[in-house]
Amino acid sequence: MSLLTTSEAAARLGIDPSQVRRMAVAELLLGQKYGRAWLFDADEIDRLPKRTKGKPGRKTGSDR
Image (cartoon, rainbow, N blue to C red):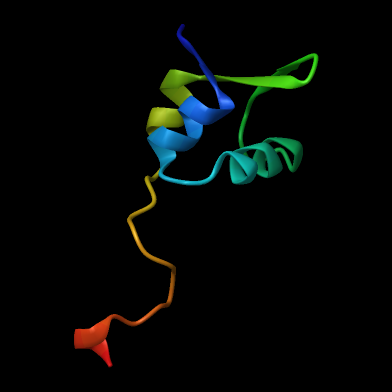
């Protein structure tokens, strides 16, 4: 089992580290808190869907 920091998990998911922390606190993402730091299982993170670039629901120039 390989552990990831909040920043590493965020990079793999394509989201901001603050979102990873909020998901962990809300128990939407399994993680273990050690002091002030969260650690996440890399295999669990890799099973989650990745965020694509751009904001959800936002139209691009060709979609308008």
